Every structure is written in C-alpha cells, then in structure tokens.
Length: 67
Image (tube, rainbow, N blue to C red):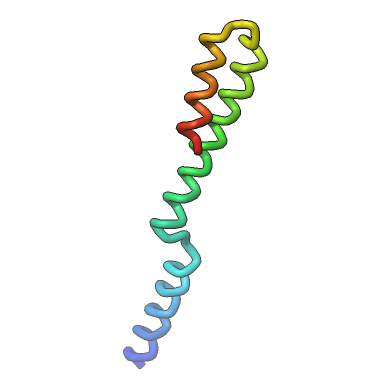
C-alpha cells in the first residue's frame, strides 16, 4: 500500500515538473522579451527624433544590441 502511494505521489510531482518550462526555455523567453523591448524603444525613438542624427545613432546601437 505504501509503495503504491509513493509511486502515485512521485508520478504527480514528476508530471508537475515536466509541465514547467526548463531553465533554458525560460532564459530564451527572457532574451526574446528583452530584444522585443529594445526594438520597440528603437522604433519609438526613431519616430520621435528622426530629424536628429545623434538620436538615430542611438537607435541604431539599440537595434544592434537586440540582435
């Protein structure tokens, strides 16, 4: 009886662990989000300061860092 209970608990815990993203998947998701934020920043900055070359260089640097 105890062995069956232990096996059931173990299978429940194992299923929960498999349903969560791995550390690698979590890190990749984070990096994608950072890149998206930098691209959004670059687009907004470019729209606001398109007439100023210094600001456009900053936008360019942000985009290069995102890639």
